[in-house]
Image (cartoon, rainbow, N blue to C red; front, side, top):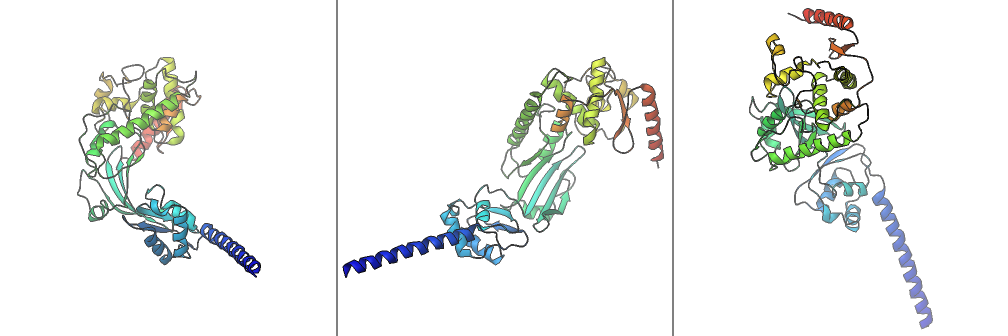
Length: 383
């Protein structure tokens, strides 16, 4: 009899283990299965929240089929203890595993409100934007110029919220002075700036910032980024590279950056300067003359005078041959690459063509014809 009881007990245990294994397999498959969301949502996780609260929120928004299973899976995969506060874009069809991973990994806001401090060549502005999860596109809520007007309520309302994403966007072609002046108006940053960084040493890019960051630290990040870019580009130099040092590469790239905003033209513009340097011709580029007048402290705001074109400053490339002594702006990566490997052309002239681009020429006769065409366009635009 005892043998029968033992045999039956063993059978029951085996069956129970089999059922348990099957149940775990089923639960696991449900945890990794595509979720029920038909369109993306923005999930907000408050500071101090728990995974169980998030699970309730997810169930209410239709992102998971079972809050209990989500909790079990998050605990089993050790995600619950690593929950991050923030706003997270949950895509349509996201599985429970994908959601748990997203809200426990970086803590970087991927949806909700975004404040962008945009540092431009002519002015700096602040944008407040909201991401529409369904379309994955931003809608502008407010825009203002800190140097000219007070912050609107929409900005004041969101800037101190923990889940607001904050970015600093530096445009290509800005000067170091412009960047420093703009940072002074970013009210969430702290500390003074001891001195303006050398021209050209700040990388135009988008930088994530947060309240309490120091202005010096933010500038340091820009300098490190530009140093890395310059070294990586310089490492790819060849016999065709028109300059001999990284400093000259930075200077040439800054001139290319200021001469054209058309991406497809950068390598052709670079070829004109490379050809002129090879022939010993003066570069004769207006942006260098402007820098000699303004020293990079904002846009000139008017046309160059003939007296300024004749004035002998270190940056006047009509008067002096070769490159100026310093960069004239902070060039982006594309201009660095164009300066390193210009297009192979015979062009030595270019002038605006009225479309935002330029007309290029090999001979002075061709160039004069292009200049005449541009003058007609200018005259037709006069009121």
